[in-house]
Length: 374
Image 1 (tube, rainbow, N blue to C red):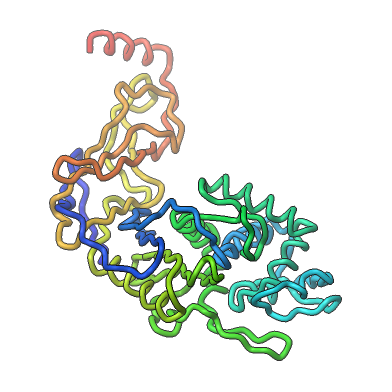
Image 2 (cartoon, one colour; image 1 turned 90 degrees about the vertical axis):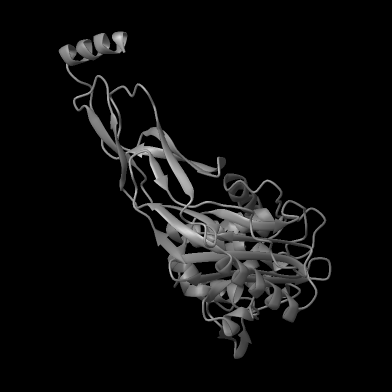
């Protein structure tokens, strides 16, 4: 449930958090459940333990491919000449053939829906010339996204002693994919089956059939990794993401992921504190062409709290003082500190929603004098 609460000037009554709800028992070596509406982690088990990510690796392959599409380095309808290397990939395949052209769009569907290792290699060779060079690109993106426990050695997730990630990093990666490429996510990750080369293969994410609110994301399996699943569910305005690593079977990873998603929705409420471009308050400005400016957030500010406690939280605006012109539109001018029962829940930067140029010489001199006596 998403609550809309009216903002007052300095203190906003919002929610009070007592003890955090206890998560369910989960069959898996590591897991995370998060509310992407607020960006908050709700609970986790061994989130920073390095593990083999298996085909969850393909989320980064997709992220790089979608970036290349956005930059117009490749095109969906573009025919790709398949090398001799790609069709020989072990493990899951979409069954492309050497020298038989296949479109980028088909390769993406083969990678996402069929988890084709051959599709990953073909896309990697198209973008970077070789899979090894593409893996370097993957690691550059991992560093940019802040994935501190991750290293990629290939595009598919085939086992390699140096190929590893963590539940926390995979949560950040999946969240970035959904955030940065929403149209591509909606197009490919909810597709239940794909037919190529007269072979129809189903999406291995069972939750696409079991829960109509689930619209992705990716499965993975190797003997060392166990059964893995990253799943995302959107119910109303809220989106909850679950990462499960090292479960015991295909059925178990679906059941345990569903358990985490349901708990994230049922045990918590999302609270919208401020809307996009909504003024939190007018802040006093010194030495400017205007005496005040509107300050707020460019995107809506949402926090997640235990269900039923949404009217005891407080949000306080802490503005820079004195705030001196000139001030650029979008410049940070303070922060909102959100607390519950006196304990910090988070701090969020507040931006100027308008520019304030410097005042003339007389105005600046007058405010200098006023500040002297303040």
